[in-house]
Image (cartoon, rainbow, N blue to C red; front, top):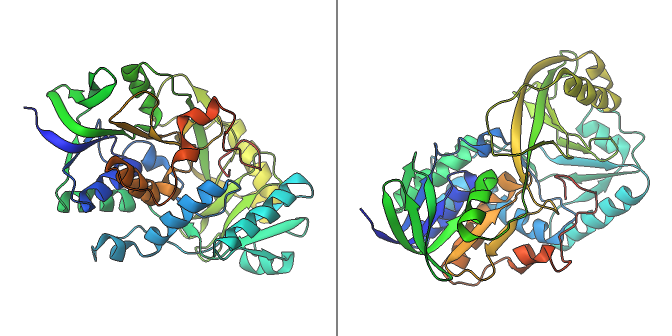
Length: 395
């Protein structure tokens, strides 16, 4: 049976749940449709690193707003049981001589200009923070003490639970199958159970955003990539929770690392992954050559890990735009529809802020972070948000 809502959110990952929460917080009547289970798609595969460090200023603004939510999660949600699993261990990023060192220095300065603690530190200081690493060859090392990592399931489920508490309807196992349109205006969505009308529809479908493109008859630039993640165990050099997340701009794959389980090292590449032709979150085998390649790059920076053992591996899928940054807001020529897709590995970091600004846009309110730079049209007009470290998830 049809029912009219103020807003319908398509997609129940961390982005969709954050949007639904903020809409409900604004007292909108909201319905969230999720094809599977809440947080069980690409959100479940996230490495969950939280930082405000970006070379794209617009991302810094979103990440800073998101960090304030994660850092005071229970109070923000007005839910004493809400926990995002935050481990505030800091973030180290090191660059070799040349363009990346120059970009790092300017990015740190831009963070400081926004009131973010972002320091340039020497190798000796960095080694005290991350004693298992060899950092004497870095031309520049940045440190963001108010950074770390969190837990995707805890954060997503808290957004969903509190959206429900505030009146949102969440339907799991309920996929949108199309849009209800009257000429150029979207009036709702179609489902297997019938049509559902709404004042505005927000697509937060991640790697399934091509469906939305087909429904609209518009092209959405989107590549789908599978990325490998491994964890390494080194008994003589544990990567403890007190040690910062590490980003290596000097390594071929611009690897990133963090503590996993309190002793192991989680590591993955920050560059392009395996291209997929269709959305697929099924776990894939991580090839031995990938393990060897990542392990060799780790050993260059963490000498004791030359003898590390593989503890586990998994894969995660990114929805990647041409500039590795999201598309947010309306689509040209279509009223009543907003999108949030193409997070390219940034989604969990930015989710609370995306939820707030998309809810503001859906309710025709000013957005605290401008959406214009994230518009789809930037790709056709030469205004892409190009990160200064090259193509990859650090942006």
